[in-house]
Length: 251
Image (cartoon, rainbow, N blue to C red):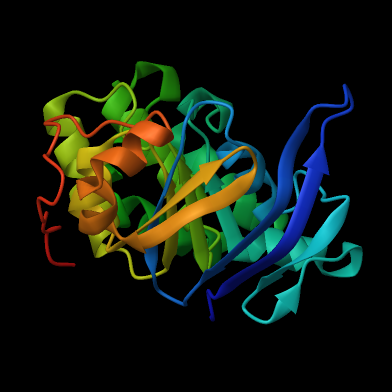
């Protein structure tokens, strides 16, 4: 399935009148992995919630794989765009991991062996078969993050949107998640304050500030621009000097 994303002129304001997106434009190629960077309150998560129609723009257009986000297409868009929330507990609410992962496909009408196969494939993709029958609240932070990812992968999305994937993980859990994401072939949008993760995983980085895209380019070049990072209250953990060329790991 085509995972190309095209966003044009998207504007959104919350009911209290606060404007969160101000004519945001962004294009992401099928299969591309992009880091979405920016200060708190920039509009990154608001933008993510637009990609599968949880929030609806007051103006502008969103296309996923050539399908426009409209009311008649909403169910299909939500199947195509999988969102993993920052807090895994928001996606794990059933008595067992198996039931959580089966929840979405079951709502699509899958039953029996087809449903079981979808659950096994999703958990295998996140190295999670060992906790398939455990209650989610018995999992470690890293295991919860992988289980939440499996609930999204079970829907076989064309686009994966992951909000702060490494937040709260220990070094081993973080590395395991990075390895998992690198193995996935669908389009990925990773919203993160973890600059090292962005460099490690994403060939391209996009900076969002005040509801607009203000910079887009090769991740190493973006993270080497000290003035650009400072302007948008971002900081690489090792503070590379101006002009330093950073090389992300190969995909």
